[in-house]
Structures are given as structure tokens and as C-alpha cells.
Length: 606
Image 1: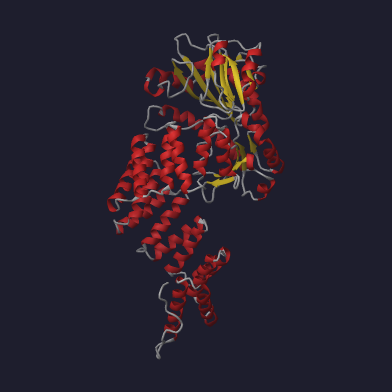
Image 2: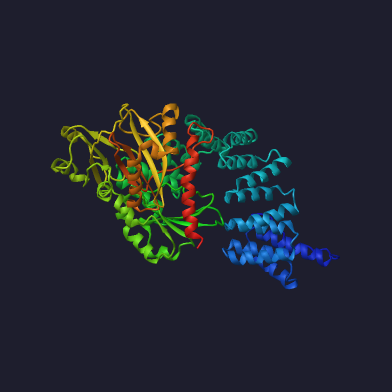
């Protein structure tokens, strides 16, 4: 226990009233710092009886209230104190720190700005100011604060490191690495700085180097949960599932509440067909809180995202960027009527459950939500349900020049028998488990004998489709993607591959000039690239889907008809590196986002 000064401290006989007050305040503060809250409160109360306008005593009473969990009372007392002594930097700093602790970041930055104006040498205030600006994603402004600190004290190691984090957020990776290395020069065992170097390397796709830095961070700080998580995420990115799982397990052992570790573990386990284990992590992630809020502190627009715990959600990082939109993720498998009562305010609803295979599991809770919702809704769940792989043939049956391969859906347990009994399926066929995307567990079976060799993945159901040979005359396979915004068609990309499974990167698109030139023709003039017959059919597909955001992957058959691979809302759209080989796509990506933003503004401005 600290040695404290008490009210029994001898008082000089000739002490002035101001000196007496200062002694009493110091005694109370010492008791406060020693944890003797009731004794210190008694002296603060006496001081306020003598002088109700004693700003220091009011502020310290506010600190006491905050320690006791009385947040509103604490703010009231501190704000009163500051109003009595508006030019006191210490009182302002205490108020700012309290606002920050309560996550009232926008209010806090206003007070921090006042503090550094009153006391420019207060490096702690500059640092807290910058940290709070980072919470608000105002990274450039945060960097200015750290630069102010370093102009006065180049050894302020946290300023170097937090500036690295802000530069990472701005994607200024080389500058971020320099800041992190400057921190390590001052403090060689600075785990957080090594972690930032790992983040830089990962973003620059230097994965081995990222692993090295994350392991350095763990060498400095063996219980660093975030470094374990980041290390796991490098393995996750490289689809090295077992080491990723190992790192996530370490991360969760240190911090069982780490949401993203649970999410990524569940995703891996689902990919591995371990649905029961995946469900354990989904329950851990969402059962106690199915509402996840992020975005700016005071966004102009807040979107409520209907979300599934599975893999079938629409990618929203670029569509609804957290730097601009407030976002409320509602994980609907866990949503209850009680959650409806505690929803934050929102302006619009976007149904991000884009895979029809996720609709049934979320249907009951989505219905509860929609019955009470009064805000505009994008992507009606009822319309999403019609985009199942085995239903799009019926959905597009009235459209001329569209080919949809006959598709059968069956529960996994009876899948092989269902295929054998089907008269509509003719080998070769394509099979895939429900809920899978990006070619995961996709197989082409040439003969019925191949079916017997299949070890079915642990999924709720399987799809089987007739294979349609869609090679072009030059021997290459082409897969186009068009995005529909409010039922209007926008070209997004073309991938050209020598293999029947076409993926943009595995097709070496960035490295082959003639492929990029052909893609650019499609982006500029899709009707010229694919022909009037196909373009007319695609426009009709957009109208038939009737969704606010969705897309179609397709090819063009030799006779000019459209072969639909899939048509749903889970399509990813993102911009490309402005200095990279795919930067020609960015103006067309911008067209998509501009159209979507126009739709959102039109619905939220009324």
C-alpha cells in the first residue's frame, strides 16, 4: 500500500485559505489513488460544501463516479468542472479521457483538440488525441498528432508504432514499415511493432516474411493473442488449413472472445466438412451477441445487414465500406425478438444472405425482423430463395437464348442414388456440395463409375448438373460476369482459361496481354463483345431476378446463346491496385459502386 498523506498532516499555523484547500485536496487525492474511495469522497464533499464551484473537486468526484460505473453522473460532474475552468488543460484532459473510455470518440476529439491548444507540450494528450482519431478512422489526422509528438520527442516509441498502424490503414505500406522499424530501433522487443511489420508484409503478399515477423512478435510476447490470430490468417489466406487452425486455437486459448478467430475456424471446419465442430465456434461467436456494430462514430447512413453465420453472405467490405457507412451485422440464426428491442438506429436494410442454401436456416428470424421493420429493404429474402442452383432454369425458362444446365438437388445421404435414378442427368456431370463457393469441392464426373468413387463431403445437400462443353473456337473457356444494380446490367470481368474450371487468377489473366485486351472490349462495349442476342438475354435475366444487387456468371455458346453457370447475389466486386496490371477495370468497377450508391441515396434521402 502507498504511504499516504492524511487529514492529520500538520497544517502550518499561518496557512492561507488557498493553502488549506490545496492541502485538503492533496490529502483526498492521495487517499483516492490509494483506493480509499469513501475517505477521499468525504473530503471532496467537504470542499464542495465550502465552495460548490471548486472545479478540481468536482472533476475528481466525476472520476470517482466513473470508477463506480456511474458514467452519466461522471460526465455531468466533469463537464461542470470544465465549464467552471475552461482553460484548465488537466480538467479538459480528464474529461476527454473519460469520453474516450465511454467510446464517445467524436466528443472526445473535440476536447483533446482543446487540451493540446491549451498545453501543446502535453505529449500524452497528443497521443490520446491521435489514438481517438484512429478509432474514428481519421487516420491522416491521427498521423498529424503522432508527428507533433515526434517533433518534440523522437523516442516516443508508441507514437512511431501507432503511426505505423495508421499508415497501414491508409495502405501506405512502405511508410508504415519505416515507422514500425523506427519503433523497434528504440525498443527491440516491441511485439506490437513486429506485428505491424507482419501486417505490412501480408498486405504486400510477402507471406513468408509476414510469418517471420509474427513469430518475432510472439518471441517478444508469447501471450500475444493478436499475433497468433494474424499468423493464422496468413495460413488461412494460403489455404493451409491445419496450421491456420493451430494458430487460431492458440489465439482463442488466450482470448476466448476473439470473434474473428471463431469465425475463421468455423469457415475452415465447414470447408473440411466438420459441421458439428464448426457449429461450436459459430455458437461461441454469436450466441451471446448476434449484433456486431462498426463504422464511423457518426455516420451519415447506417445500414442494417441481415447476415448468416455460414459462408453464403454477399461480400460487403467494398459495397458498404466501414470508412463511410455505419454497419449493424445481425447474425440471423441467433436473432430473437428481444434483439429487435435493442437494435441501434439504422436507415436502410440490406439482406446480405445471398446464398439460397442459407435462407431456410434464417427464415424464421428474418420473418420476425421484417414484420417489425419500417425501413427500406434491399434484396428481398423471398427473391433470394428463387436463385438456388436447381431453380434458376425455371426462373429463366421464359427468356430466349438462355441455357441452364439441368440440375438436381438431393440430401447428401441419398445423393448417389438420386443421381443414378435421374433420367434428366447425363454424364459427364458436375457435382458440388450445397453452400460451397469459388470451386470448393467441385468435381467433374465423366462416367457413372466415377460416381461410385466419390467420397461425399459432409454437407446438408449436393447438387449435380449436366456438363455443357462451352469451349470457344480457339480452345479456351471463357467466363463472364455481369453485375445487376437495381436490375441494370454492368460488366465486371472476363476470365479466359485453358481449363474448364475458370478462375480469374489461375487463368493468368494479369500476365497475358491479349486476354486483358479482350476483357477490356467486354468492359467497354459488352454488346459488341458478346452480341445482341446474348446481351438482350442477360438484360432479361436481370429483370427476372428482380434483385437490387446480384450478378450472373456465364459463357457464350458457339450459337450465341448464354450458358448460365450461376445467378445469385453472392458475387464479389472490388477495385484493383491503381498501379497494377488490372487497373483498367477500375472505372467500370466505379460505375457499379456509383449506381449502387445512387440507389441507396435515393432510398435514404426521402
